[in-house]
Length: 118
Image 1: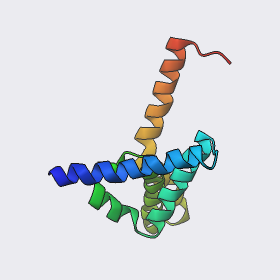
Image 2: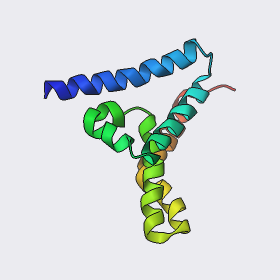
Image 3: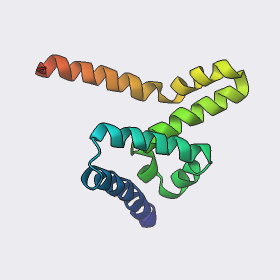
Image 4: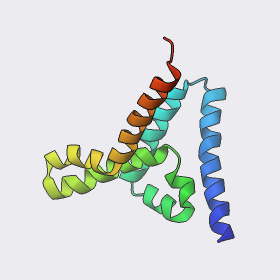
């Protein structure tokens, strides 16, 4: 069990280190880094590698934003096999709808409470 925590920490920390290097060395904006990580997660899932990373690292691979790209593509591919072209649109939101809805809801609530400027 201790090794599970260790590998989750190493993999999740490595993803964070890569993100920090992209910010510091390549001077990318946080939006560019986030988008790059979502695309990287989708590409890794396309090659069948992200599921293996999740099996190995557990939360170290499912918590970072790369998992969102994995979930988008994974859901689309599963539904596309069942329902064809229309299944792509359905599958994208099937696995990620709770996260998207939560982000919108909590973003709205925080905006009401703190009254952002700009």
